[in-house]
Image 1 (cartoon, rainbow, N blue to C red):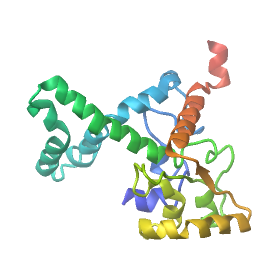
Image 2 (tube, helix red, strand yellow):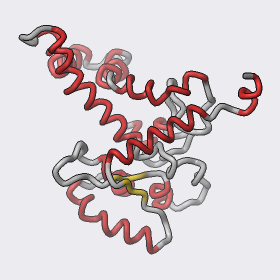
Image 3 (cartoon, rainbow, N blue to C red):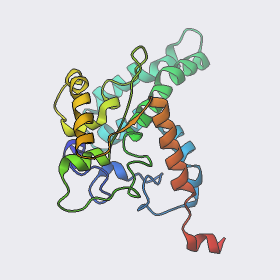
Image 4 (cartoon, rainbow, N blue to C red):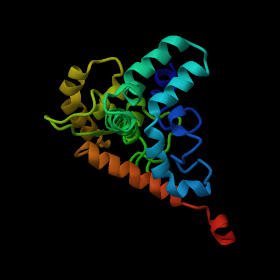
Amino acid sequence: REHCLEHHPHCKRFDLDPDETFPACRMNVLTAWAPHQRVQVVIETVMSCFLGIAMWIEQHVMKGELLLQSTFILFASQLAPLFIHPDGFYTGLAVHFVVVMLSNVVTLHSFHLSHINENNSSANYEYKDGVDWGEHQLRTTSNWVPNEWFSVSGMLDMQIEHHLFPSISYELQREIRPLVKKTAAEFNLPYFEYPSIFHGMASNADFMHKLGMDMPLEKRKIQ
């Protein structure tokens, strides 16, 4: 509900988009700077390894909803190899790291690269009352070009089409992609697209690094 009713219609609006704020990291220029953010790219990567556990805590433990069922699913799908792998705990940990943690890292960064980057930052565009809704989605969202034989996402590569038409299937998104790109060009609007997911992840990491190093002037003088 939060994603559909807050993030989608108010994408990258600091006061309304919940995906623009995160206590441990600075994901936009409006978030107050803190010293630990100098290494926030590392913090973001390490924290993303535990994405499944964090979501379990947020969605089930804190809310007290489906706690027994969710705990069983979390253990059976992610934590079991740590305890039942025939070659022992450390081999199970290696399996957990490759299968669960690395996939969590890719998943989180696949989300972040779609909006948290230089092209979509407030330095290039800020929401104003009366702006066309479609234009707002184009200026605040980025795609990446999936490889035909290697794809790690079933929809995240086409976030522009997803934001413009949230209810349509992935197959239809692929069909309308050329039309959306052509229409954006006709109206002189940007269509941000990375050559690959790795280009997008690099752009996100570079932008996060810049935000983390962007110490306010008054604090620089104190140091």
